[in-house]
Length: 248
Image (tube, rainbow, N blue to C red):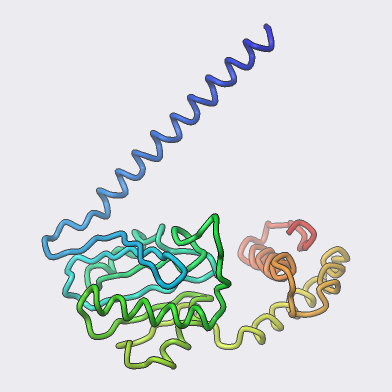
């Protein structure tokens, strides 16, 4: 068989795979849309892009009754949007107008080109304030309920502290209280377990970090990766993978 013929077959196979993937995605999306469709006449379902200063940010607004209280969701990460998982918490839409927000630099709000302002904690706090003020105008409401997850609890609780008149209540999920204390504990736990196991590779990586003052994402991930393997060993006694940081 000639090389040209092989390339033709490969091209046809790749095209078939691509078409199949597009069709599967289409039907999965249609099924999800039918499952989560807002059918009530008084409901709301909007995907909105809003310009806040130098960034465009996206919002998914859903609820069975647009007169219900508004619940603003501040996702974690940084950079881990929860908009794609809105259907998992669809029961909230029975009692609230739920606003899922992709923060600057995350999800649909990510900008591939152009200037990318650093999402500092103070910037995020002010973004929360701007978002709530925008919701006041768009939905004609007085205040919002604020729910935040993981890293999102850091700017969220500061926003509530600085601007309490904007919120009915605050709900923290996996609330961060002292980030640096948590990192020190995580590092010490990983170091202790590596010493107990005599894992020289993991000890080398941990000592190279030199503590919990990380300067790279890889350094940040090393103790977490080891902690996850320790957890798997606890809940799955047959799990025998060694705790190693070198694969991160």
